[in-house]
Amino acid sequence: ALERTLSIIKPDATRRNLTGKINAKFEDAGLRIIAQKRIHLSPAQAGKFYEVHKDRPFYGELVEFMASEPVVVQVLEGENAIQKNRDVMGATNPANADAGTIRKDFALSVGENSVHGSDAPETAAEEIAFFFSGLELVG
Ligand code: CMP
Image (cartoon, rainbow, N blue to C red):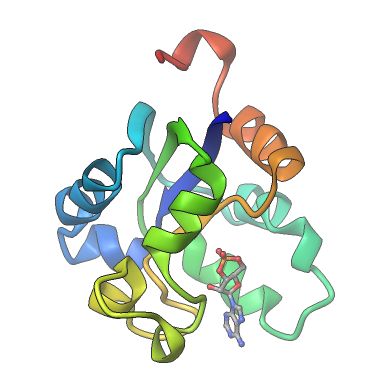
């Protein structure tokens, strides 16, 4: 099915000027970038976005990192976009990521892992609505 998913290019990647190289991997995989903006999250905004992880031991570190420098938030559209994006990203921990994936090529650690992607249709819809209005999605 034609799907949309929320992607975030994280601070470790924007800092190292990797936005274009990461976008090339999405586009080469057939994902279309139908919305995109560069923002600097406040700690409160980052905390709300990752609220589902609030009881995890890494939550504080995750929120601090995501608010540390700008991120690029984007909506990717394509056939099976949610799983396709997860395949292009590779495993959460770059040590376990397959060759050619974004995290294998660019991530620094499990925390500084260069990209976020929605994990299911329901979370994709929620995460897209967290950052974008309908008018900003230009498919
Ligand atoms: P993401 O897909 O953005 O969703 C939650 C994030 O938590 C995950 O990517 C990782 O970057 C981060 N994370 C997961 N496990 C750890 C960990 N052990 N230490 C630090 N961050 C983690």
